[in-house]
Image (cartoon, rainbow, N blue to C red; front, side):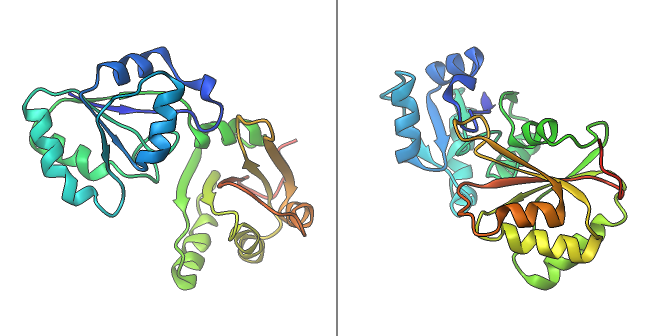
Length: 226
């Protein structure tokens, strides 16, 4: 059985009891970074588990071995660096292969930076679109941003701290001075939700050293939500 396990996005207290039980019972645990995962396991007294390196650049290569584990009725848990696997993280190809081979799998829910940022943003939560990370190539990135014009709903984007200001400027140029919220360090001591028009958020970030991946929530329409 394959378990797709959500892990905390920052605060380790957000782990679920079910996730801990699954990890204790797992024969193999697939992880993006074995060193980081080792520290995570140590924190929860789960040392001695068989950690298998499983990340974007070796996922396709490792899938046949994982499928063999599942056919042998082994319990396999899939983790990402934080949050829910598959969501801008490895795992989709493995799930697709499980479906094709009729092998059982399930999801162990938990923390999600996407939902967390949406709730913190003050933007409408009844209908939203998640775009993940925007393309790095300028042409493709600007095309994706142009597509946001016609969505008519709250839009959520993941962004690197190194590209955040550039992305905000591109959004403002293409879409106008919309209301947005930039969330960073969510669930941690220095959690921050920077709200305002794109121009206001750009000013607030000016000269500031940004750390950690950011989640950007963009309000549909031109009006402020409050």
